[in-house]
Length: 217
Length: 306
Image 1 (cartoon, rainbow over the protein chains, first blue to last red):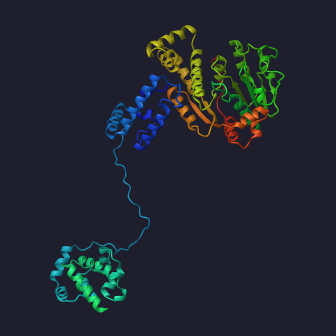
Image 2 (tube, helix red, strand yellow; image 1 turned 180 degrees about the vertical axis):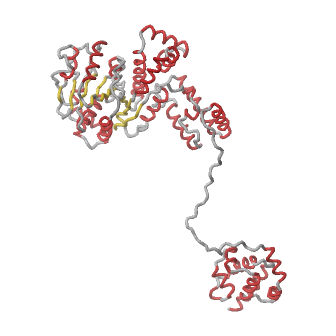
Image 3 (cartoon, rainbow over the protein chains, first blue to last red; image 1 turned 135 degrees about the horizontal axis):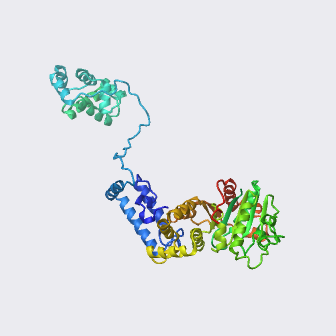
């Protein structure tokens, strides 16, 4: 014979699985209320007033317990002790990660670890060529390229680090006015390029470059 | 052996006779030799619904021993494969069948040679209705989505439950159990079959086990009739869940039958609703139910306790 309603455990009362999630618990609670609340057609005349009150109180208690993480855990522990449910393995729910829509193969050289800025500064201070270039009053694209090659960096590395497109970097280095992006963007690009090379006084240098380029026009 | 489907439902006017006749017709159309028996003794009118306004013979002839064999009281109906034992023109005391007559009838029904037998039972919870309901494990309850009707169905289910327990005991034992239940579970508990079962579990474990097995063998069905558009369509599912959870009886929800004014028209014109209005929602609901009747399998009669 089936058990009496007041001897069911909270999961059985609400027709839930022991691993139910809060959404399911709320849903089950609503469904149970539809059955047992006074005035429900389903349970009309099925219970006496007293029985109905008892059942509603039990359902309320079941819901309040299961929806509260702390109380539910204690209750689960008790059920496990009584042997009514199996102990749950404590695994954190798997966190959903974004899934890439496109699979872009970047090739083996694409992602290399960028040289740390400290190492770059060391190299800059040791290199005579760079000092000479920086001492000039003009700064052309050719000069930038020279600094870059002196530091042993490739255009792709710069592009990866600064997120500036490769063709923009190329035209910055070539300094051809017709290929350059509009001045507003150019200034920003040059700044982040210089920062990426590990140079100091970026603002001043980029102004120098802009002057040099506008002279070419 | 025939598959017997008692159809009852407590409240009058919920459509028991209409559904019985429609399901009978459907099952006959699908090629099963089908018999419908009007056991709404004292208020019979199934014959009118299946187009036999004046049956030559009927159930009362069998009771009054005018016709010795039940199978000879069967009359044909205009529909092919569909047969009827009518309750029309019964004498006025047939509504209260004595126990021996009832046993005789139940045995006779069990011997009839048909594929499907549908019993149209009357309203109320008279012993006639309860005993005929207990003839099969597949009793169908019909209710409408109204509190009055729902109340009567629950009442009928409990009465059947009660009646079955009552069969197992003689009157003194039963009285004793009732007082015992009252003592243990409070005033009025003798009226709750589940409380009685608990008493039996302790006092007579053997009988308890037997009863328990029998109750778990029941496969009651539920049909919600006259469902209007705005009614709660999951009422049937919720009711069967209720019965399973709180009474421990198996109950399967078979389906809703939509309300349709054309049913009234068809009955007034004394034609088959299914033929006159085949493309209504109600008709398609009934066809769905008819499939259940035809495809039914499994053990059928549970007469052995009588």
